[in-house]
Length: 316
Image 1 (cartoon, rainbow, N blue to C red):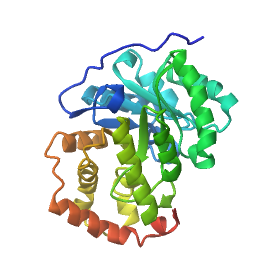
Image 2 (image 1 turned 90 degrees about the vertical axis):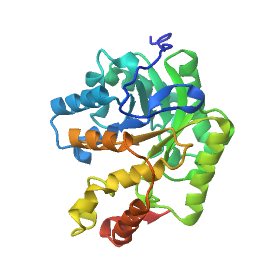
Image 3 (image 1 turned 120 degrees about the horizontal axis):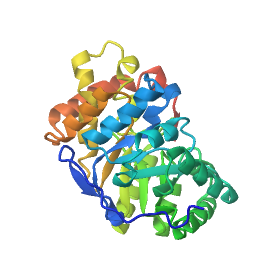
Image 4 (image 1 turned 135 degrees about the horizontal axis):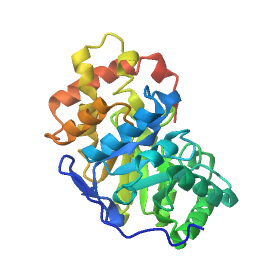
């Protein structure tokens, strides 16, 4: 019932945020994307549903055009659907499917479309966790086959995947040549969903970025502020760390990630207007990764790695 929905469109942006082209999608997008996990109450959002809708619209008004969510992000899709009414065709909207069963893919996508109040997605991703983490490359490619059917029906425009770790599998998907974009954990702290990476996993991630770049894929970075370790959670992770320096952590982490020109876009979960404003201020300023940035991140992370929160993560 959704066939023929995908639209050719040019997304208009504002001047506040630098723009990069999202690889072979050819879409010119501001480099700050909205991570929809930041809209979920049980994951830390302090706002009412109505204020979360206003927050998304505020981010749009400030220049954000890439919005990322997933079928298992609780109320995130419904909030985005409400917030993007009337401006849907001027944003790049992404969701994910976490099912490992090919026959369930269509139903999962239709659920997302309903909650997002749209009849098409700019991109659909095979979710990393849960999803790719629980599958082999061969199994994931069967999910990919179902997503191809949806693309052929013009329900989705582009196909991708996300990966918090398990970059050996991610490299297999990239090497298949069947994906338009990928979203990879990429930040100063080498972490995924609930894991800290081994040196091997770091190099596999680096290999993923290199291969994706070689193939012209769109490359989106997540975990840029360490899943909140270098952001909203920093004061809890390292109590007593200088408050003024803590406020400088997110900007340093953003500049770290943007050293790599192969990264086209950062998705960051933002819970408050102040976080939207702070990130845009960083991105509209000098993006040179400075010696002070290096020192700050090193000093903080030396203490963070000794925290109970980090120690509780598994080594991958």
